[in-house]
Length: 456
Image 1 (tube, helix red, strand yellow):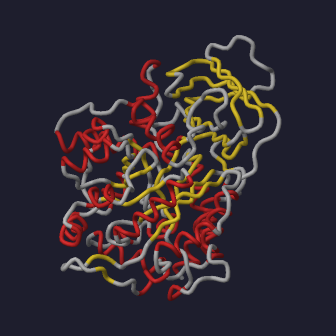
Image 2 (cartoon, helix red, strand yellow):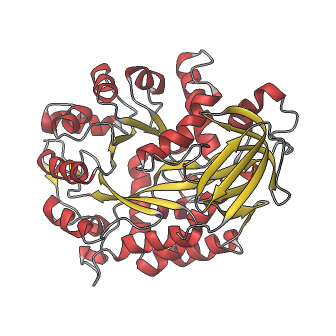
Image 3 (cartoon, rainbow, N blue to C red):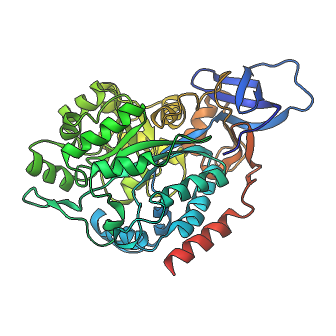
């Protein structure tokens, strides 16, 4: 992703960030790809300042994405079933992709994200090789397609290269071999995984490489430790799917005598640069392990609802010390505002009480915490020196009209949708202006073409 050049000024009608709170007439100045000044109540405004009508917030971080799952939207909703039957349909799509078709699909999906205000994506990437698990001439061809897709759509990416070595845990606790489309996911062992990922080279402008352990179903504990060590040596983010399904917990207990959280802790995979995705079915001890290690808890409520996973203990995790982040995961919808409010709404359904998370806490999960978890601590904030990412949400749509002065953030978090995003600036560059993507002329057409090419 190229950075912006020169100096720019914006005047935000209203702006919010965790550090600023809610400010009015906020002058925002940018040089290159960084903020140089953020001043509420600005008096002298440069004549060339761009006026931002609505509420301007820091860029949103989508901390958990599987880009190719976007092709399943609508299809898997047309029938009943479970997470496991949904997974078979997902494997069918995985079997059809190649580097070129994945580039087209991911580029369109990432553009859809930017239209929704996402300025950085954490791509949990395990579709590595060709059919039958045969590596491409460039073993990282699929990874490079994702990096190129993000650059062409205009957003930052943390490529969370995922170690995926086994097909699951059998009822007797043994590891199942990879089979069918799963063969495309595997590198053989953690050493070959590490060698391939290292070949991606150093981080690029707008792109960073992190690591992921797919799950306790897919990586045995000894090799989890290797992945965790690779990430630790590079001070890179480390993510893992954790306790998404009750069946996963039962299989883990049978195989290893502990819960997934305990197994990951013993492998050295928990910590302040680690994110545990879903974290749905946890014991009290599990919550203590995640909180005590300051591991992030990444909730993806629209996917967790769509797949009938369950409602995770968000409040308990935060109280224990785990920062909360958000992801759109399978992209049943791409709307970080919806993900944010569903965390609170899920808590209300589970407890039959209102008011567990404030709008500011949910907005912080979608902005600064999400960026931190992806290895971008200098993003997600409206402060001088931070990466210059802005999202402006309209306050005159049918969903946001009538917002009171003192509760504008609440109106956006609990009422607005991705359709209300009007302007998105990433690294000082206009990526969305007045609801139109500036790099892809027709995002819906790009999505339609890419999805049809994969499914036909």
